[in-house]
Image (tube, rainbow, N blue to C red; front, side):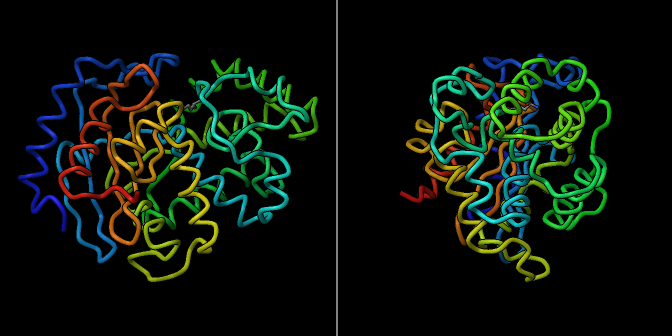
Length: 309
Ligand code: GLU
């Protein structure tokens, strides 16, 4: 097991924690602005089922953009690759996650990848279900299977707060509707998407999701194939190329493992065949990634030569 024990991991957390003062919690919606900037926690779940933890591991946070990996896995299971990639691309972008710019310059218009908001909205629109409630329930049930924890749920307060402020995401939806990428009612899609982003858990649950992906879709607890291998690999590939917003290149150089961050401060990281890692640190750098979380992963990766490259 890496990091020898919880004590050593705690030392690394305390070291990385000094960076939190240089970051800023997300304040684009009131419910996220309440986070405690100094928090930093990590769980490392080995595929054999052992777990190292440090920091306030019980603190819960909303997945935000991390959910984009999981909705992608679900729609690929729902529809297959051809259907999904006819509507969303596979290329990274150097633009911020919520940029609308490339939608107009790329012909025919199609979001560049499923990790930026435009692509993620198109993906969420593809979740199978007769009603908006059925769609979010299916996604939540899938995530409960991955975490092996049926108490994982939607934080309605964060979902509502985001729903009431998501003007840019709404405008992207209307643009995508104009170009035939999404269909149906935009308000219903916004409800599913904001609830998806507001799915809440702690970094132990997140680490377990990482362990499933580390095992290419096999659940470490139940040994069941809960995501087809090809889809698990594909999700990890997107995490490497686009998972850390427009800092994905730098993260690949400094840390070198598949990872996906969210604006609430979570990071889901994977050491293939070995570990799932969940990190929470709400102080963000200027590109929207957990400032201390990235440093912590960099230190662990360096110490244990975890880079896949
Ligand atoms: N709910 C956020 C949004 O769509 C997610 C952003 C993020 O975590 O990057 O704006």
